[in-house]
Length: 323
Image (cartoon, rainbow, N blue to C red; front, side, top):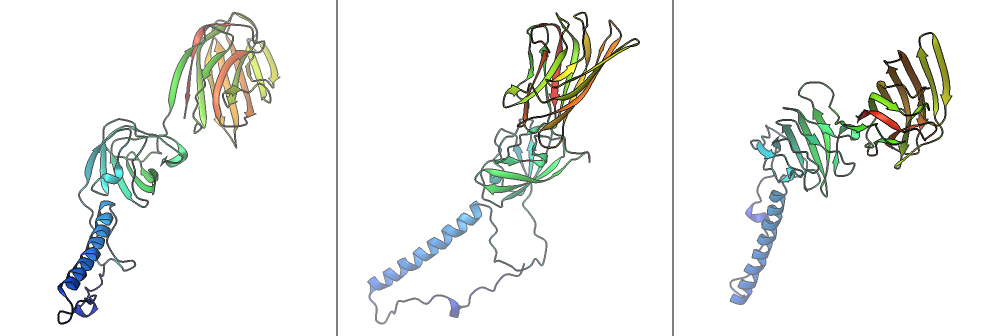
């Protein structure tokens, strides 16, 4: 960096005090004026230092290395005050999920190394992460964060130590399918989800109506507009049908106890494409379903019910997960 030369005596501001003609009170006034200018300059320098901003002229070029301060270590917490770290290089320890990086001036940048596994919680305003999704960190992962001001940060780079794609956080929950005519598998699927999996174990009901999986947005499952085809294969018997009211599973008896997997993948906009494979070991029967449905908004709920809506589920469980 080429710095400007310090001012010469000739370029320094001239004093307005003339010892030969001015009174002591004039000298005092001039000194107070000079002190005020010095105080103002000191305040500006302190502001630059406190906010971690470089004190250098605009333009120019580097003529040597610019060395940062030694890295510092900060413990994980819901809010990590990254801008207050006394180095551009920060190591975060611990496993507490991080939802905020605190407040710093726009343009402040920090390079962060994670010592272990924790969750970075995506927020479309205050903590913008790759893929608009939560990120699961691993030991020695490195991320670069830039402050947007007002407590908002963006991750502009994320380097996975394992050299594999960034791991997007997933979640799962298990519900019993042993009561009720409708089982809510989840009512809190996050908007970032692009794939949802439901694993069924020994699901049964007290009637012969077909099972239905319904997807929904805005808290309510959609009941129309499905484009679905279902097949039941048992021995030499094959039965097929179509459905517009849900992803149907072509059961025909209350004696089944079915296990299998349903996978739903987000396509364009809010269209979801689904595939279901189930089996009933007791009758050596297999069930296959495929289809799609377009939702009015982001998927947030999936329910299990029956075509008639009156048969009650009386056995098994379902585990739903997403990523």
